[in-house]
Amino acid sequence: MASSVLEFKKVNKWFGDLHVLDDIELTIKKGEIVVICGPSGSGKSTLIRCINQLETHASGEIYVLGTEMTDDARVLQSVRSRVGMVFQNFNLFPHLTILENLTLGPTWVKGASSDEVKEMALGNLRRVQIEEQANKYPGQLSGGQQQRVAIARSLCMNPEILLFDEPTSALDPEMVKEVLDVMVDLAKEGITMLVVTHEMGFAREVADRVIFMDEGKIIEQSTPELFFTNPSSDRSKKFLEQIL
Image 1: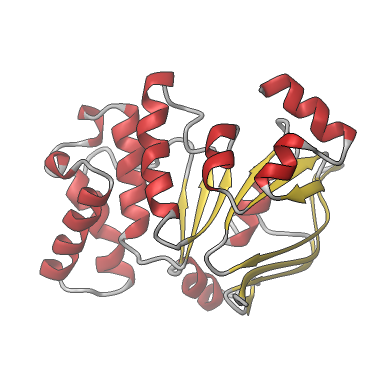
Image 2 (image 1 turned 60 degrees about the vertical axis):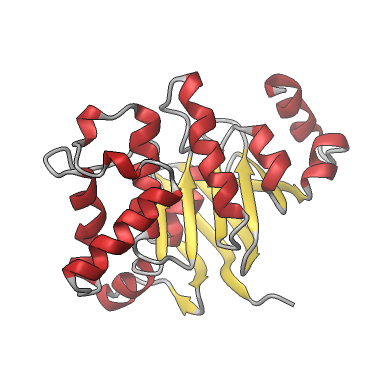
C-alpha cells in the first residue's frame, strides 16, 4: 500500500467571518492523482495553498511528506523545495529568458551547478514540448506556452508533489488542450498531483479520485466513474448538471 504524502487533520481557515475551510480531513497517497472541483468560493484553492503555507491555516494539522507545517522558516523552505506549484497566471519573471526562469530556483535553492541546471532545464522544456522557446522571453510566448514553461519550472525542482491551482482558467479555449496534454503525460509518470480545475474531461481521464467541495467542506470524494455517473450528494448532482 502506498504511503501517505499529505494529511489534513481537522483543518480550519477563516477570512474574517468567512469560514473557508471547515474541519477538513484528507489523506493523499504517494503517486495519487486527485482532482478538486466545486463552485467558486468553495475553498478549493485555499486548501491547496495551505499545503505549502501560501495561506496559513487557523487550526488543525497539515502534514506534508511527514513534516507538520508550521511558520518555522526552515520547515517552509524544506517542504517548498519538495512541492511544486503551478499557478493560474504563470508567475514568470518577464525580464528573464525562459531558460533563466527555469534555472533560477535550482541554482539558488539547491545550489546545483550551472551546466547541470541548464541541461535539466532543457530536458524539462522537452518534456513540455517547447525546447525551441528556451531563449525567448515570456512576453513572446502564448498563454499556453507560458503555462507549459511554468510547469517545466516546477519540474526543475524535482518535486515529490505537484499542485495545480486552476492552471487553464486564464487561457484562451484553444490553448487549454496543449496544457492539459502535458498534465496528462505527467500523470502517467507517477508524480503525486493535486489539481484544482473545472476541466472535467481531465478529471475523467486521469484522476484516481475526485473531491467535490462546497462552502469550505469536502462534500464528496470518490472515483471519477462513481462521481460522474452516480454522485452521492444532491449538491454534487446540481454542480455536474450545470457544468457538463
